[in-house]
Length: 250
Image 1: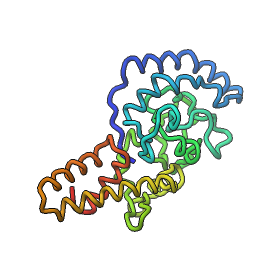
Image 2: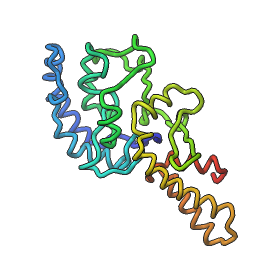
Image 3: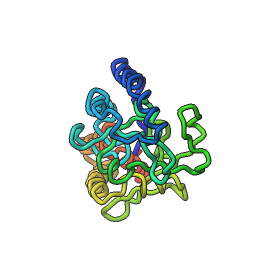
Image 4: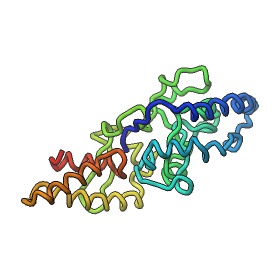
């Protein structure tokens, strides 16, 4: 999990979201007021068109949580950081419906993280500060889930590299880190850890060549691989950065 830098929203994407917001939200508000809002009431087509395509590209095809690269059409969802139609365990909360088409609430997540782990969970450190209407200040909330659009996850999360299945873990006693990696995302799902283990083998090989090889060509190639693995474009780049820092390679 790394901080996502995607810059200013493109005009064509902003236009799509603004149009959808103007057309859909008044009707959504009526459904909220009548207590009849359901997830299906939002226009799902927008999540498979230009918006999804751009989000997927801006995240280098990677899940915002587990950092696996996944196919745009078959293996990813447009993720609403704050759930749009309901909040798990909060029967009287209609969801953050007014953020359904908000650029700052949209990410790309793999189906495993989104559908099997996060779902509609959105726990807060202080429930009394939860926002229920569009006129309240979201900055009052303190989510347990780390927001990669606004925060640097590497300040909360590192990894256990002992053994053959490197696990994500909270730094120190960070409760937000614990909930993010163990409950709210698939960062420690068995499939994810097995794929991360493959990158561990690559990182180990790079580190070995950088530290022990007397062959300049091998060292140069290892250095190029290191910079490739820690690039935001690569799968598990957050893990790679942690590993190479731990081993004194960067």
